Length: 137
Image (cartoon, rainbow, N blue to C red; front, side, top):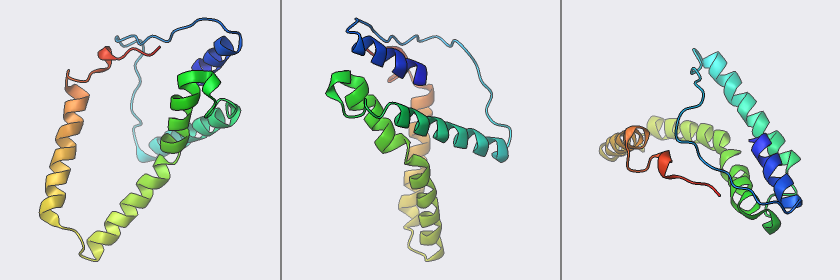
């Protein structure tokens, strides 16, 4: 992300034409973390990396000169991706609190769980909204 952000800002700063294209074929593979300790370190590293990118490129955020990068991509990462882990952990603790205090409507909770699960399967394996339809300019 840092390399692409640097390249985009360089191109815009120097008034050069550029385009970012999506390649729909897999170019590399990775393995998921084998346990929670490694998973936790990975997510912490990703969070630190995002914080560094936001800090290094703060002049770009909400700057219309940088077009989509400044008005959509970096603000999205700042407002939604960066606080996501805190919001998710808070949500889990709140859900546990609701379970303990008996405030869950179980029929609706189960329906919601099934819907979210099926939706994630559709997005992951479906061809309706696959990334091959995406082109970033």
